[in-house]
Every structure is written in C-alpha cells, then in structure tokens.
Image (cartoon, rainbow, N blue to C red):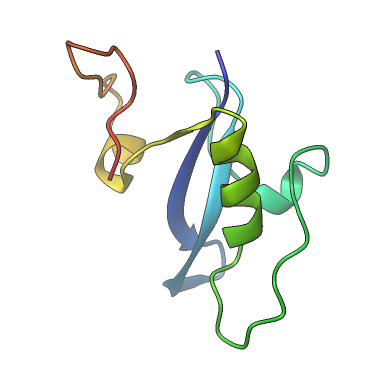
Length: 88
C-alpha cells in the first residue's frame, strides 16, 4: 500500500492548511516536512499551498488523498467498490 495524504490545519495556525502524510492508516498524521524522504521543495509562490509540490509528486507515485472528515474519524473511510480511502 502506498501512503495517505490529507490537507489539515498547520500546527500553529488553524486558518492555514498544509499537507500532512502518513505511511500507514494506523499512524498519526504528520506534516509533510517531517518526511524528508517524500517531501519536495515548495514552489516559490507567495501565499501558495504548503506541500503542493509534494502532493503532486506523491499523487503521481500512487499515494491516496484522504478527506479531512475521514482524517479526523477513527473509522476507516472507504468506498465499497474500490476499497480506497475517500477522496475529496
């Protein structure tokens, strides 16, 4: 299984969101910057999304985007047909 990605509030700022990752569904979400082996340098765009370059890289590599609602849920958010995490 490839890892999971989710856009969650930044640790010190509830109004800004940034990409969070986890390699396995049982792990807690961590900012993408905690995973140097996966993160890509951010684009130099003022006000740009933190982690957008990493998101593009990992999406291409088969990682799954999980909705924010599913990220906060303790239950597995899956679709019956594909058994993949719900995508926003």
